Length: 399
Image (cartoon, rainbow, N blue to C red; front, side, top):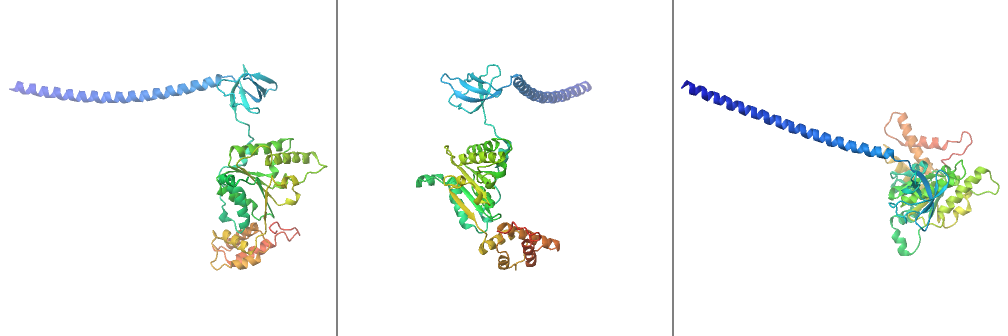
């Protein structure tokens, strides 16, 4: 019987060994399968990277293209182009480009060997023009404007309605005003209203300073004006706001220097864009100036700026609204007498009132206080009224 027991024991040992070895092989198999999957994924990644590098290499091996401008489309399907290198060429058009899509004046790319038109290029854009486009709407709404109810109503009618409800004008059978000119003393809210319109509408807002259109070289100012309106048409609905319009739109003189003549060329291009042969579509034009008396008569005639909106000095009710707007975010005394502030700020503009609120806060900070009291505003009003009187110069905060 001892032999039988030893045989049974050997059989158990062999079975245990076999199971242990089998589990070992299974674990080894799973590890190899996992390793195989990792290697396959790495191989796939490397193949994609190789294909990308080959594509990039093919692009680098391609001959460079020549830029040109289309001059004329011939009846036989060819085109006359002006190369950037100088001469004109009669060239074939690639079959991948629809021939009815090419128009005179378009930029195209030419093959360096055959000079065939291979692709259409976007129109050139000056980086300065791109910088004028405001992507995000300004954070100023109509609620941030004190007074100016009549002015805001006219701006809504002439700028906001044509952009938001163009079908309303079609039903009535009239064309919306082409341009609106904002006039008034500095600080009365012209630029603020333009920013509010941009906030309330979903239109692209393009802000231009009149002095930016005055360029050194001949024709550069006119080119900027042309590209500004081309950008506005591409981004329509859009608002073009020309601030300080008098910098480029003053009276034309019979006797002028070369610099004056360049400004006049820019003005003539602006006149053409405001009331030219081509329809502007959903592009509204806002102009602002402190000196409407020096603007050229051709700029003010109906058809260019159809509506002129004057921004007056705020009256007592408007000044009270402006004070409440600028103090609603301030930690002011609950017993602040607004009527007293209104009576003390006669003939001051809205910009001056904003500065008074800031100065009142600075007086509180100077005394290590977190609450602004009536006395701080009284000191601020006195400081602003005394501004500019020391040297006899008038203050720009007054109307």
